[in-house]
Amino acid sequence: MVAFDTLAEHRSVSLAAEAMHLSQSAMSAALARLRAYFDDELLVPRGRTLVLTPRAEQLAPEVRDTLLRIHATIAHPAAFDPIETKREFTIVASDYVQAVLLEPFMRKAAHHAPGMRFRILPISQQGIDEFKRGVIDLIIVADSVILPEHPSQKLFEDEAKLICSADHPTIGDDISMEQFGTVGHVTTSLHHHRPGSLFDLMLLERSIARRIEVQVPAFSMMAGAVVGTERVAILHGRLATSYARILPIKLLSLPFALPPIREVIQWHALRQRDRGSQWLLEALTSEAAAL
Image 1 (cartoon, rainbow, N blue to C red):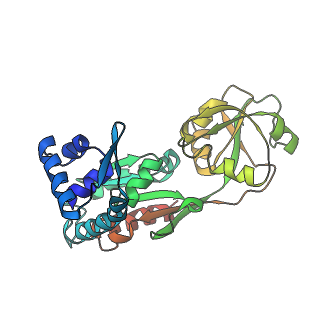
Image 2 (cartoon, rainbow, N blue to C red; image 1 turned 180 degrees about the horizontal axis):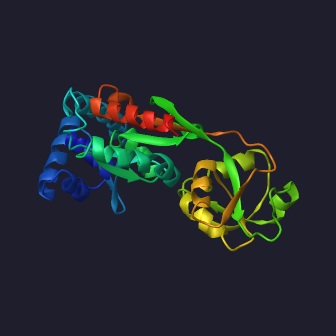
Image 3 (cartoon, helix red, strand yellow; image 1 turned 90 degrees about the horizontal axis):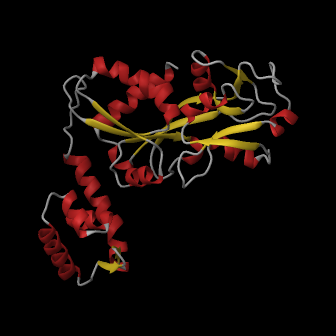
């Protein structure tokens, strides 16, 4: 079943063999045994890759669910000691969450859990898919894009702010709706599967138009992109405030109302009894409350 799950994930005998630390011939033999057992080809060639047969498509989620249940039961000890652990945790989050929450948390964890390791991945469709497969420990996203089939918990709220260069020639302490529509904007796109950010979706829902002149791949690049220009950008208030301490930018209220941004943390439904994941969840929740 582990061989089947790995083949279903990678859709390649050679990649599956590498993932399982087997030779390609051993992986091919495992696939042959699976085909004989299920009396089905399971994976068939299509171009340079393999595709699942209808029978394999039906089996794949059931096998993955069974393996996750086994993993959740035996992979980690019942007790968890943050001081002694050498465990690595994988978290999917935006660079915004990394800056305002994860960085201060990991500084504290360096003292309270010195052997704990972290792997922070950007938000992407691949990351979401790996979370569904149980590979990712936690994801932190806006509440509008949570996965309803997995548990979630609110972490913190923030508000949208407009930022511009501190010496902007036409924008003072506020900005009019007319200016907002005519000035150039900097925006971001977290990944190609979801053009734009949460702010773009909010504006689209309200039929608010703007002229986008620059698009960057991360929230952390937006403040620098407005400095010395006449452009503006919508950014999370906490992140904007931190950049205002080191860059010549100023923060303004938007000329229209937007709802607060709510960040939530999610864990796989089968990790409910994983003491390590639950410890990390509680520690991050506590850190978020301190914001």
